[in-house]
Length: 169
Ligand code: FES
Image: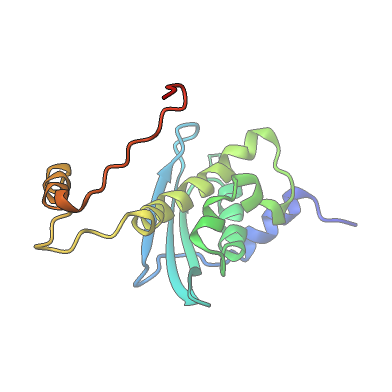
């Protein structure tokens, strides 16, 4: 017989994976639930794989309910090996998927895990998306610079008048 949701949660709590603070983590995220006042913190370490930055491992600490602990336990296992974008795209329900579908009153427990993960990964994603800063001492040209440069090339500009087909000779 398939274990029930309660049995899977109990099993995850009896043997929680990746529980505890991580020394030397690359990213940390903490979130609190406005619904119940519970809190969850997640630490993430990255590694390079095939030229991509992927999650090497993640750990968590929970000041919350048993469902949040169970979801965090399975979620930290699920996200290992995923890129930041892949992990950021996962919903609370997806992170809790190994436990099975959560009842509506427990969905916010999975969202707590999702929130902590996003809080840890968002700065990494923003950093990766930010354009490289302009090299020092070489400011990017302003519109004025570009126009002045255009004026110095004036002699080389060839102006071609288009023949207006409506005007007959
Ligand atoms: Fe608040 Fe589960 S009851 S996180």
